[in-house]
Image (cartoon, rainbow, N blue to C red; front, side, top):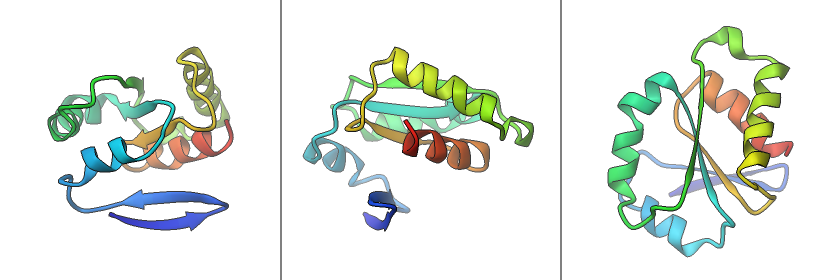
Length: 112
């Protein structure tokens, strides 16, 4: 897996999923949150779930797709949901998607 450091936090990415489960197990995250929109929930989340069969304890945050959701109200909704799930600074937010999910999910995770 490749990573870059941004503002003191690692941003990890890869083109493969074969290292994902071991990466998650090897790190001491307090919890795993997966941010999806309706489309990635239906089409991409099953692929991720198949890649991490030994990890069953995670929370899914589903949001509406579309560029019109790039706003502070979106972030407030994600923050509230993260807090409802008991997220803390040691939680990992996995943004599954592009555009709104990646942009706003990264912003929300960084500013919790």
